[in-house]
Image 1: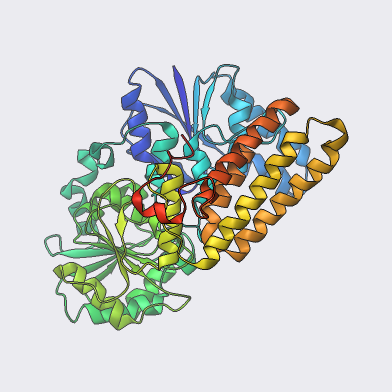
Image 2: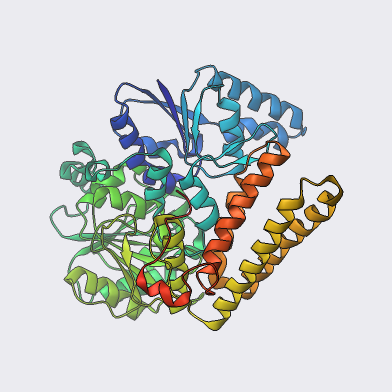
Length: 505
């Protein structure tokens, strides 16, 4: 059996995929496992710890004819076709696509044979997006900034692959956490090896997902007034200037910069022996989860911390509102409180280690809580929550009416004379569903579920298409009926736990 696991995202996503990759190999010990990543990020597979074949997609080589002196789209397409053909010759029995991107869906389709099992995004025969599994459908409908998902990406990766991740899948190999390796790195840079230290990642996946060099400098200066340990700055070669500015701004012999001076894999022994790890949304946060070290993750609104935050229990996510970064005094105090095990003062979420939701956060609005509870009811079989407002009830009424209207049109669509009018009305229903979402954002999880399930319908006869569409509208109508006392239990019954089974199953 030959299995291809595709992860074409960046460093952090690859590290978050480690537990799933290991679980796949454990589930199929005799399988020939192949991993596909972009060449630029292949270093993140060093030390993954399983027997596998790594394939690298050299994006620069594939696109060079497009961006060269003489632009040639045809030459680039030929390179891509040849590369895909060579990869396809391996003959994969199963493809697990963890990338959730349009390109990866086309690639999965191109690499599939007649009997290949595909998990994750792929394409139908007519070229439209195919979402074969429920976990990928959940990702499509509910995941991303501005959405209400609270399931971590690492959990979703495992769900797509249909594997059970164990605690051992989140550990490093012995050599990766060997303190001796850390000591050798410290000694080569004249850093005392026995003093306690914390690791600060000076950058992030994007510059707006962390603090400026000036704020980090001021934070470190204040922290060193309370704490007698050392601060080790880490980062990529592209972040050397940021590290230098922080170093100059702190001006302390207890702050050391290893920014750009270590390979990615060499960070593991540094992280494993650190008191805590600090930083924004970054690859180092994902590595720290594998190193099993507590973190203070500074999270801005451009990030959904539920999906990417650190796993180690006891870690804290400091939530920063708007574009305003925390002042250095409060930032240093939060770091100090974590070091000393004290209660935080700011808006903080805590890592619990529970599955599938890793964090607890008390500062959640009733509307946000409703939207998440609605997701839990739709996908996980939990009770449907009580509506948060009269506006939400009106929204459910509108959804019920639209579903009724759509079902009525589907019932006459087999009538050739009425088909054109019915199809036009169904198109208007889709547009009106979008209007309900804009007017009542709390209902977005349900409408997103509905839209995604319609996308999942593959090419088939008119009769079969109509029947599958009708079933989706019936499910939508059933949920809406729970909130209006029609053909259902009524709103008053929601608190009695009379929810139906989850819709996905």
